[in-house]
Amino acid sequence: QVQLQESGPGLVKPSETLSLTCTVSGSSINSHYFWGWIRQPPGKGLEWIASVYHSGSTNYNPSLKSRVTISVDTSRNQFSLRLTSLTAADTAVYYCATSSPGWFDSWGQGTLVTVSS
Amino acid sequence: EIVLTQSPGTLSVSPGERATLSCRASQSINSYYLAWYQQKPGQAPRLLIYGASNRATGIPDRFSGSGSGTDFTLTINRLEPEDFVVYYCQQYGSSRWTFGQGTKVEI
Image (cartoon, rainbow over all chains, first blue to last red; front, side):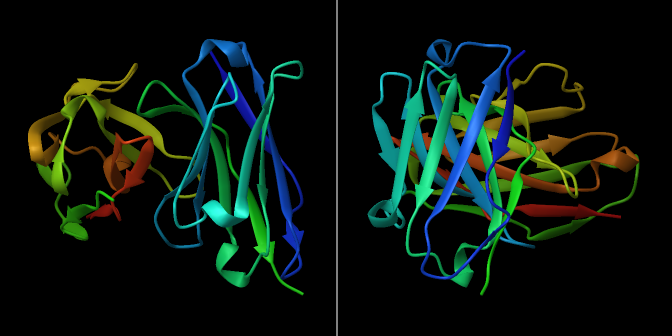
């Protein structure tokens, strides 16, 4: 069964760039439809951020597209998220997940990212 | 952009009863790409239903999904204490994923 683990900084300053990595185990990153990032601000609902296919094809939430980059590293069985120009509104738990083909069937445990000076 | 509206925001029911949760889409969607998730406090969401009516692996048969077009329903029969948490619907279309705002099921 596929397992996912997010890694990255827990605290980032406003205006800086967030970089998160999701490490996939138990399955090849080439064997699933899409790999995605979803976030959840404290006490609020879920927001899809971006998804990437193992070929490198990407899809972005239009509301975040100008600030987001998602990429995949098949050699390391990882995929990553980069989010620029952070504000307090980006404070959230960030989840990585796999989508097969249109629903997210496996999730990481999530990592809390706080944007604060 | 397709917007999913879940109702009610909070549903008060008693253990052993049935809960009926609604998810309405702003335009017709392919039911194959409609899913439901359960989220317990401090945990990642868990896939319950995919394709509008198919239970995910390991999901008890007291959970069922139905609907088509713009109106979808998650039904939870014989509510157990661990079912009193938050539920989200989600759709995929035009290379985008969107979630509803969630329904909290409380005692």
